[in-house]
Image 1 (cartoon, rainbow, N blue to C red):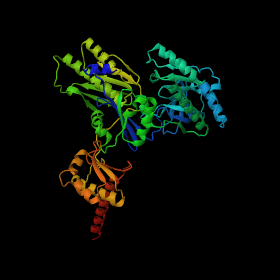
Image 2 (spheres, one colour):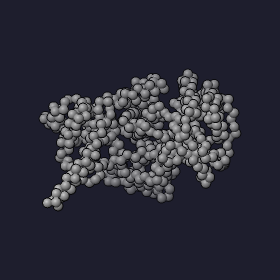
Image 3 (spheres, rainbow, N blue to C red):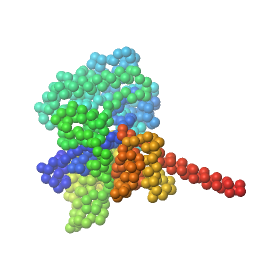
Image 4 (spheres, one colour):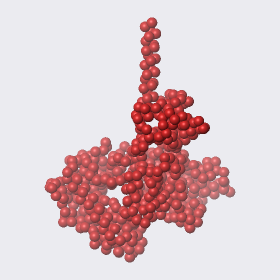
Length: 559
């Protein structure tokens, strides 16, 4: 993996990439950025109160059967009905259904799955109306999050994911990750898991279980079995639609899937999340416990690591890369389209054919990064610059496969078509990450009318007065756009100095690159954002102005 990355970037394989995770915990969401040699390669955003996330268990009710689709729509509490296809029922649906009926009939005790007889598999070519009926209660798991106008996609093949294994009720199989190459290790793991696995469960052994001790594996096995038992107990006490099981921490669940022993640092800017991640890393890799570090500076963590700037330059419609070339990314409901352009390349190759190959190879590097960064899934069509030589087209195809080898999402790449198009399918589990890089005017909020920008600092002074004297907030940080922050702190007798003398010295003015030009936000000493309702203030000022104007017109008419 490292050697491949080095080859495609013109480095020697002996040079090892510096991998770091940066976790930005805000009031409403958690953002996790993966840096390789300080370059942003992956960004995940998770709402802190997210619902209908992949892996969550819900008690749902069947609303309607669709024989034409061989599927059913279920009510899980989402605004759109959730979709359950016949093939997502799983071969052991009969056993699963019998277990659920018994559990709901006698809510005083949990049926012992180890003593439950496994029934024959349902036929692969069966029909949904033969196994489901409207009003039936099901314990379902989110397989795909709501995307666009579609509701969640469900499965009844329940699974509980740990660091070393995946536990699946209603089965008796042991599967070993194909990435474990050693035959001896596969035999050891199969025998070990077989000795600690309860009857009635199937287990998928993950790559991270390689060379792990029996105590570690047994501890995780017990934890996952308890998650199953607790879920059934909660289901017996619940009425649909109801959330039955979810991960304790979104940050931990994300790190569980992307954690690598090669990480040099994990920076977290919030104490509680820092403690959760540190405890988790200490559990799975005690030798790496010290790489988790608490970030305590006032400067936003993404600004400190130059992530904000990279986000703004990487998520636009047009993305530039080396030598003046660029790609254009368009998103539609059906697919993603990427167009490659040479632009104003200053470093030209001897001929047009070689130049096209050079641009296409560099574009492939950036496209592979963009697919991971934006988590683009489904069908991706790439329009590369036309190349006449078959060997050049083959070189590009092989290079794209090489740079996509590090992508954890399942994908399939087809060679260039006769029209010069490359088609890629990539696993889509959650919506593509779409970050708007254009900025809405914070002064008019898109209305087209603004107050004089020269008076912006006067408005900030009024807000500070309101915070200190009316809201009685003594300790806080005010974040401003870097240009405005520089203006406020300009000179020996700066505006910032005047504010501190007037309102006290317990607040700070800090630059924040994520803010628009005339935008600001205030965070108190507990980390909560104070809503100063700028838009409503502006609207009310407008209303007052209109009211005064109407009164004047009325007085003129009366006179």
